[in-house]
Length: 598
View (tube, rainbow, N blue to C red):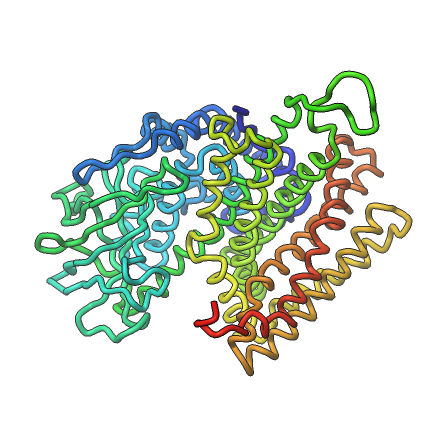
């Protein structure tokens, strides 16, 4: 088994050279952010990932969380690691300073999230959902609710969950049946929720559930959903814990992967009804929950990047150790490690280049979010929010889909040993598989991208970003004789043209035949991924070329970045042709068969 090592150098590159770190440092609350702080935080987080979380990953997979009579016992070592996580202040890094958090910007906290998920995704799902619950209550809760719940969530002393799905509802939240009956200053909640990640555990003294439910007079559909805070233990006015609430875990799921993360079936109100507190106004629950969901969607995209990085490291370590065959073209001599074989090199480059593109694109989305939340200029805030909204389904959908491909490639590099659990490669494939389903499947992300982020605003943000990508061609054109940059330039220009054509076609199609447009939604999401990812890799290549010209040091890193960006341009960006064809010409065949003909 290989040991995880945080990719600090590439993370530093994203933060210091791709992201405008100085501009982030000028945002209110980020004044102390600088290169030295970034390096120190990344280094310490990397040590925690390698030293504390990585040793839990395999035992977490093999042992799994255990359920017995309503109680969930976490994997041995998880509780102690969570205590260290809280004590070291890691739970509070992105939290609001007004509630005890450290207020680090998303561009930095995102890198920490990637490290910890690479080391042990099962563990990290717990603090990720806690952060989302904290954000929802902070943004939409009453002052009393904020004071009662947010500080404990920020510190990590309590954890939080998101309760949406029910057995009959799935992703169709209009079918939610959980009921909330008003009773004085609270409501009585009755119903069943499924797929509740870390819905029950023994790592903290209290769990704060955010629950979607309907009040007695609520209208049908999603317009009649309200949001409630339902704590596992009621909280007294002085902040101490009171009686156990009427909520319990009736089972946990037996899953393909992430065995260390309990996925609970939660029963609310088997007795008199669980006490819940209305967040905001009745019938606006789905709107409020999207605060948590959009945060979670970005985080799940980061999970995809994290698992892909871990699978790459594992495969690379194996390729450098596994001796098999002689070097191609050499008839005699010693046998060599498989990294000497061209096809293994191709697979490793396919993994490496996509991970770096995904990380860079997620950094771009996080940068937009930081400006959306804190930039004092209203126009910059608005565009930052629009850009973040556009990129979120892309980062979530593309990164998670590619994480499955990348983890599968890792198994392939191991050959037959990859199909054997003891080598560890299969775990990353199993764990990655949930990421394209979590927080809305790839299809849901793609429909959101086409319907809300594209059609609703008539393509304004999409076209603005396409203009920005097209303008970058002039910078690449300054070096027409540089082989790598010339190849990258040609491929990126082609990809941007294809994206522009597909965008125009979808905007027209959506207005006349929604089904035809949505038939190409997932290819469109992937088209955005490869083109925007290619744009970020092209930016990285140009920076690397200039650093090498300046003799700025770290030559090996910058040479590798140039080579990796060129590989992405020549091997991944050409997929844009297939995606464009599927979008523009593929709807007829997609919808050709009647139900009976399948």
